Length: 97
Image 1 (cartoon, helix red, strand yellow):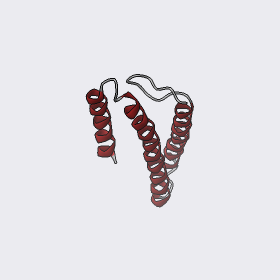
Image 2 (cartoon, rainbow, N blue to C red; image 1 turned 90 degrees about the vertical axis):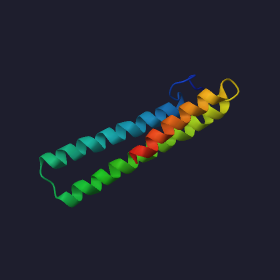
Image 3 (spheres, rainbow, N blue to C red; image 1 turned 135 degrees about the vertical axis):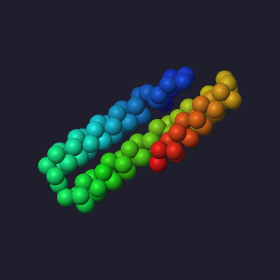
Image 4 (cartoon, helix red, strand yellow; image 1 turned 120 degrees about the vertical axis):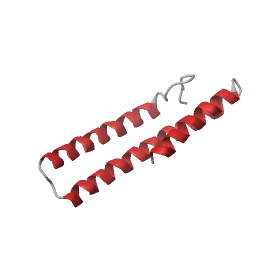
């Protein structure tokens, strides 16, 4: 079973999965930098940019799913505060899409 920090990020297998995703995204961004430096065709750059954006969105979804579980688990302690925190984070994520 996963263990969650009281107000922090997910840990254990979820954290490892998220970190692996972020490392792949970092590699995609570095590849985009090289493409721009080498003046790659615009369509190729945009295709890779789209892939990096999709990967970031999927990573966000993984974090949301893990935090939804945390919010449900913590509602017995301070349901209003927990749900407010989660709603604020979700609003920020949706705003970035």
